[in-house]
Length: 376
Image: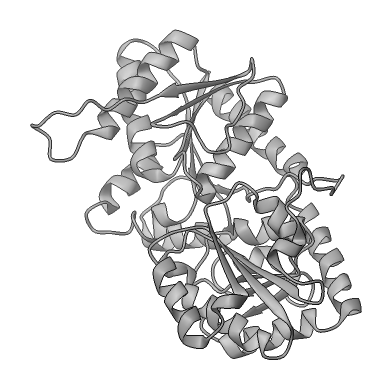
């Protein structure tokens, strides 16, 4: 199959999943064309089966906001005709599904029929899509997609609750590529992050308000009072400055490292003993899954899709949003005892195996084939 993938090329979960899915499909012999405004961050190397096409948006003084959807839909039409694309897979309802539908209509006028799969990832539904300005367009785009998938049952439920959806939504969870070797290539030294007798606690996100960054700091503050530990804050965003200030106010700045956006996430996770994700909501919780794949137990909120990823008492613990005291107590329970920590680490990896790329990608592959056959 020849598949066009439309996604955001950023560090966010939807872009990571879209890129990894495309790369795995390429390894399975399919021809993949990434179409976006910048090369995706995980798309480091191109191969004979992987192609990248940049969407350029010319700037005109006439427009207060440059028309990206128009440029994207036009680029999709050109690429489908040039490379004889069989299927469009758009990640994120707005603006990608909307642009994809417009491309389908333009192609239809030229006698070309092509199916479109739309994958819903989270904020495109719960935040952006539910805004009154966009809700009508999001509803239209989803209903006009040939196939619709959601990364969790929780997100599917939210979508059906918030929108008038007539299409069947298939739940295909996010996935992880497990490294069975588990060795660290060109590792950074653990001693750079913590002393030998200190536990390493990690948080990775885009530092938006929904991630409850102050709760991460407060949970760690309580844990380090009972267990010697250091906190690794990986990522960047609008809440970072407030987090650094809170660390100063609590007197723990010397125990917290702010990495910013990093390409050494796996190396950091391989040295980590506990992962914190106390978000207000998560459509899935890909960061938690990535931690579990590195044998890191998770302390998280019980909101959204996290209940489908982090298993209570198995891979970690879940608490109500904002219950930092319980989260800290559960974290201490895991890391204060070597034997208990090892058991949680091993179980976290076992749970991660149920989301392995080998199990999930065939679900997409079968969906692609069905979407193409349905139009014949």
